[in-house]
Length: 490
Image (cartoon, rainbow, N blue to C red; front, side, top):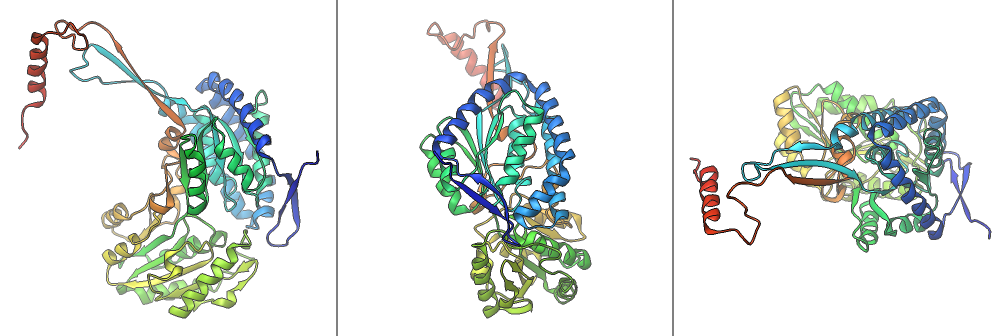
């Protein structure tokens, strides 16, 4: 039987980068079966040996850094420098996950309280088994490895379905892992289109799905998972806001805003899409931003739009914004597929698609606000809630604004910096999804808590879980509870 294949293309040139099999549901089923066996072996290795293997994998990836950066460049079109940065951040997270898994997940004693005085209690986090990772194309290593690295460190086996736009990167990640773990297929990649991902999510032997993609696709994945009550962690993009307060360093703010919006052609889930600037510094900030954007060109500082279908969405948003608002730079002519030059438009109505919907392109809308509080209210009036940014010289004020921002992460006086801190969890709320990768929360996301209580000795006169319990024992319990909890606090 002939195996059907599909090509991955360089989005900037249309050249074929590689051909990969469209793996059928039966092939996916077989991969999950192999992963089940591998998961048992990987879990039995223990945390110390898994740590050693993962750190070795980190070294292997580092040795192939230039090769991987070139492959990312070819499949996404992003500059090699940006691909290199993506890989460096991945290595940082892999290192943290490997080194901290035992401390976060390992067995520890927990207090039992006065009622449980005769008990010893422990808590630990055990591997789930097979974890399915369905990855995106915009950061084809950093984003899926935020799940893969942490799930592996937690003792699970991985079946990874990369985007059909970047399959070669996903295949190579699994191949290189086999150099450090040759005994069993602990980390496998399956390639294909939507049918392949659907088969993976629907397999009842998969114990958790980590998905990155659109909100609409996440709902379809959740529906498939619901058939088997398979839990899912979903990162579904965002419409991140950037707030410039009256005391901000305007040069630094404009520089960060521009990079956060335009880097990777704006194809960043936590990229800047909406900018709110306090009236007192609005004109000065816009001068800084307008001067800097003239030096940024598609095809030079950033690459093409990777997914062809996204160009139409970007064009629709640009058309909408430029009709309703005031153009600062760019416009409909900025779209020259597969490239889109920077677009900045101010005074776009808050109910327009360009402000409400995820654009995923090198465009931003800018709005003047009375003060930071109004900026915060506008920033929070979104169905998305992934990341965000605050620029202010007042650390206390900036921190309070960041705390009140309706998002999973917020950067202060920097942009997207939280993604580079391995100990911080990454994830959103609302239409941006739920669950967390990265950090201790990311490790626990791919493990199941196991609680154990052991009776050390019988409690004299307090055998409460027996049909032999008498009135005297119940009275002693009531007196003890009254002593412990009966005093009101005023």
